[in-house]
Image (cartoon, rainbow over all chains, first blue to last red; front, side, top):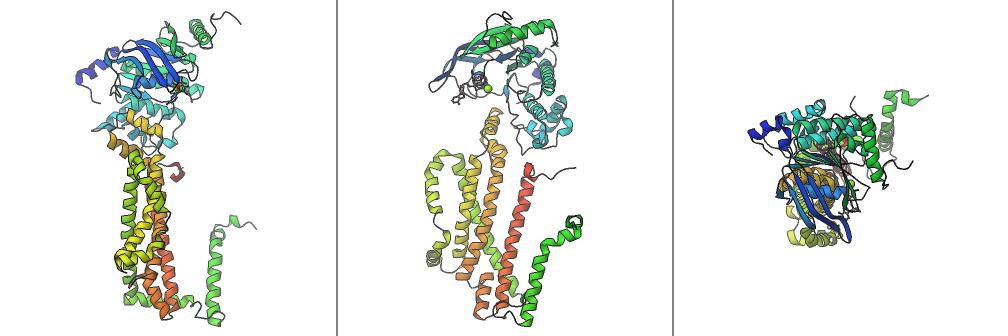
Length: 261
Length: 261
Ligand SMILES: Nc1ncnc2c1ncn2[C@@H]1O[C@H](COP(=O)(O)OP(=O)(O)O)[C@@H](O)[C@H]1O
Ligand SMILES: [Mg+2]
């Protein structure tokens, strides 16, 4: 995808002008007899960071695949950047749970996948931003899980997406690598100003990164909680802990936050 | 004594038996245990090799045989790969072709030899046709299987990253299918030599097989054994070339990566 000069200039300054709005109204998705999304309503402002949490199988990935245009809804309306979503779009990129790197391409070529012209300089630049420039000529097979996800992040960012969808990309990483990756994602989000939708099963990750945490239950949104903490957030702070506890209780289906125990 | 501690001794172990056999063979023919109507002396084979090489006769037969083998293989592998790509990427083509191919595949191609001789006579076409037919099936089946077993997630990723049909094929499907295609090619090389030997032995007026059959009639048993040895050598050479291709094209594959450092 190519950007105009002005777009690129805007990117550096007021990043949030770059992100797109997402507007889902009465969104439905069925697989045979199974209704996965049930008239789901979701509004995301340009440049906002939204985390989606919920039990396994509640439809998080399905929602993300609809947002990506990889699948079409069975009902309702989905608008991205003010236009109805029809199929894939150049301004949306996905980071999957598995890094999904092409094993037969070097790290650099993976980052430049689908680009033409002088993509090498750009790819190397973006690899530097994710801290992997020295692995540019390696095969993906020799990378660690965290490094693979960094490459996958670089591959998404090289397209300067206006909407970045992340489907549990850090789920398989160890705790330390995960925290490193979280701050990397946050930094890049602040630098580029794209709209981010992160699916995660880790409530603390959701609270650390998102402007809003959204809970999906039985195909509907049952909690939409703003995270009022200043960035960068400190996991140890009492406010952080309280919020994390509140969301966790809702995910586990207990109503009164901190009521029992 | 621990033999493994002596690299020179240990490395020579596989050669002990062949050298011993060769010595017994040479001695046996000299002393007269082995009649020279059963097996010629190794030295006699070397002598006839030198004589045939000097007269240019051997080179002529070798060239004819290799030409037949390679053109038959080229046609068979080419058709097999194209059909495999076609049925592998199009469900309609698969429905149309696959059942027929599976049925024809069950006829041993060498059983067609009498029919093929009736069609083409004992000219070059008959042999090239038989080789091509024999090579086509393993190449087709492995290409088809290879394309079908490419990771769906990688294909989805490629689509989501905006690859068009041609780039998706070139960057994702083809390299993903390559390990399996190469297995088919190696298999096809084996079929190629086998078919060549049978075809040249049954009906030919030149080539290694003809040289062997001609020598049999003249009771030149050393030339018969020489032809067999040359077939074995050529088979080994083809296998070696296939291995080189694999190492070159599958460099990215963890199975082919030499332990670095
Ligand atoms: N392609 C599909 N065909 C049939 N059922 C599906 C398909 N994709 C997802 N599902 C079902 O939809 C439900 C939601 O799946 P998913 O969105 O992947 O959940 P998660 O929240 O864990 O990401 C699950 O019950 C799953 O089995
Ligand atoms: Mg999921």
